[in-house]
Length: 392
Ligand SMILES: [Ca+2]
Ligand SMILES: [Ca+2]
Image (cartoon, rainbow, N blue to C red; front, side, top):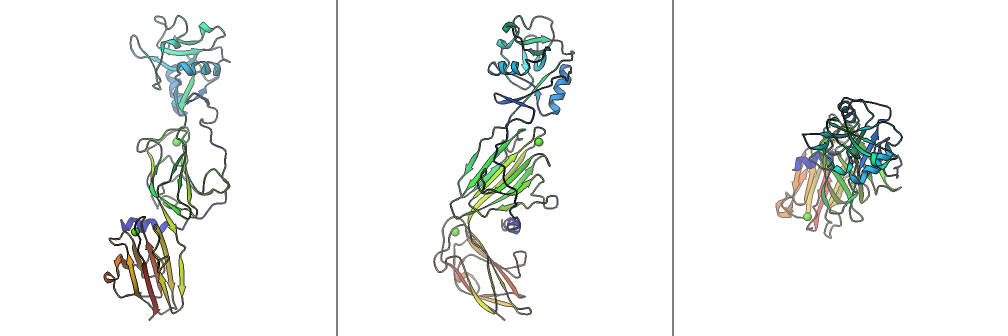
């Protein structure tokens, strides 16, 4: 647990705000050149002709299937193909002696047949035609071997904007741990109380590299105040692969996380945990002696604190630190870490929680730098600590 925390903390603070202005236009639900009808995106092949199975392969290659329609979308789909004189392949095909089915799973209703269809022995694949004569509209049965223009469809992204207001929690890609869909565009916002910051840490990442991405903004997206912190397409949990840190920390009380997938190929997605906390700027001391305290000391420290304090003294000196007061919620719910060196990568010389009786009178560094890290969880606070240091 502590190791994970330390790994997380080691990344915090690396990220700097990018200067790219956020775009505020919502992304269209369908990819370019696909038309939105109902809850689906449709793509018409126009002058590309294929036999039915070749048409299905073509649709698969661009992220969809041969199209299905419902009674509600049929008329709009007919309009989409009204410029062609050809009947157009759809995903309809005969699966046994009496039943027809769309390849994308859409339920086919017999009311969509053109008058007199399907007829006997006309073929096992379903094409659609658009005619000025209403009786000739709709589906006809045709031999699957004929090369026809065709119509592909795919679901469009439909994850709703979601705001999270609890102090800690997790975010995932849609459907996680099942695969996300193509064409997703999801905005998830973490909104903490005023005065809080937010840290987000990924713990699972299987996303199509360079094609599907998570964008992290410091601030409310979309708004002019939102700063793009990162556009992640490479596994942030793999520090040897990824140019990104695995943990992102805002400097405001809102974080917006956008997930975008393109029109092809989807994976299991990602999972990340977030934690809101009271920001406490790091403290820096130098010279020959001083006093370090928890925030608000001698009043109780706040919940959700993460605070670093750094002491640096002259070369060749060591630092001896003596507790005059220590009252921190025990069992490491809240704790003070002391590092023997200039940062949190230095060896730990103390990890203290509880009351004064449980901590040593003093600790001593081996060199001229000491780092303190104070963490408090979201419940229960005490008076905190006061630590006098001096060079020796
Ligand atoms: Ca993709
Ligand atoms: Ca606490």
